[in-house]
Amino acid sequence: MIVRVAIKALGRNKFRTALTMLGMVIGVAAVITLVALGNGATKSIEAQIQSTGTNIVQVSAGNVSFGGVRQGQGNASTLTPEDAEAIRQVPGVQYVAAGLNSRAQMIAGDQNWNTYAQGTDVDFPLIRSWDVEEGAFFTPTDVTSAEKVVVLGSAVRDELYGPDYNPTGEILRIGNRPFTVVGVMASKGQTSFGQDQDDVVFIPYTTVMKKIRGVTYVQQITVSAASADATEAVANRISSLLRARHQIQPGEADDFLVRTNEEIAATRARAAEIMTSLLAGVAAVSLLVGGIGIMNIMLVSVTERTREIGLRMAIGARASDVLLQFLVESIALSLFGGGIGIVLGFGLSKAITAIQGWPTVISPDSAVLAATFAAFVGVFFGYYPAHKAAALDPIDALRFE
Image 1 (cartoon, rainbow, N blue to C red):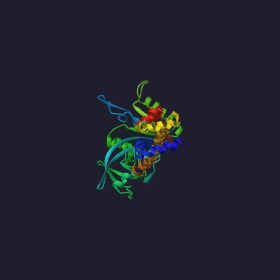
Image 2 (cartoon, rainbow, N blue to C red; image 1 turned 135 degrees about the horizontal axis):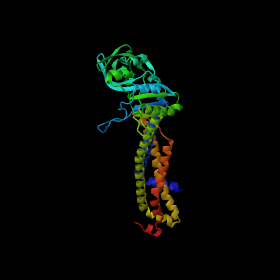
Image 3 (cartoon, one colour; image 1 turned 90 degrees about the vertical axis):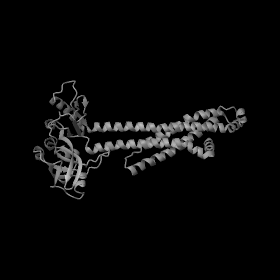
Image 4 (cartoon, helix red, strand yellow; image 1 turned 60 degrees about the vertical axis):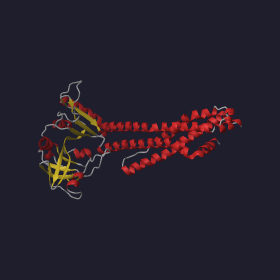
């Protein structure tokens, strides 16, 4: 009975009721959409790490400072090919690939393309589970002799030669140096952050060291543990080995960084979760604004219906009945607005995935939480107007003009 009366009262001024619910609609829809985007980003990160393997250990060169200016991780020259060979002997290590990168202009005939030349070792495709589509990856002899051979990412092949062409055996100039194309990698696609993994070429790391950059160190060493369970133990053994090789004393900071893919995934996932929480918190502010709007309209409604309240109380309605009626009206506004917001939030999430291609994961928990919060807002902001209506004196209410 009370619910029917409340809905009838709200229907008397449909336009005002719709505007009052708008704050709740926008707030709930925003919370659900942003949480879906955040969950989608987290799932993409986890999928990316899983695709590259949970047993990978990344060893990077440390930070170096020049004149007090810190250059950041990867710029120190303390990581060497000899370190990579020593890591190969660590118990639990399956594959090892030293690495050194350089950006350069690729020239093939009248076509050119600027991309990353990634110096690596023969174990790299085994570590990354990355197949060769055409030709073959370079050999241990190529690495030992620092041969000028190159394996193309599929995106580079498409730009320089066309998608249907097999460039194996062709001469590709990297800068001013001629390289022989020995293979093309299968397409790997984009990362969850939009980086094209196929827009790269692979060269023996010794070639990058001696003939492109002219250095004696490497920037990173990628390691694959024999199993996912052994990854953490392998990472600890590598840290101990490198500290001993680099003669780092107890208490001194490492001049290298050892991270597992699971640690990287956890860090990125935490960052995504924090950002999602911040965005959801901002969206929740609109729920509070919507609640204030509901309280404002309910106060206006109490004023407009003062004579009606007095009449109802004069014919036997108790103060609790009046309180409950206005409280139900407030909750109904919140729940109707929240329901529309949930539907809109689900629709927006699907639309963002379809139009922008951004991954979204809609969580039923977020819908339940949004509906619960909407009901709480209705009770919290509706209680004061309802209490004010219930506290009216029937005689004064009947005399109200």
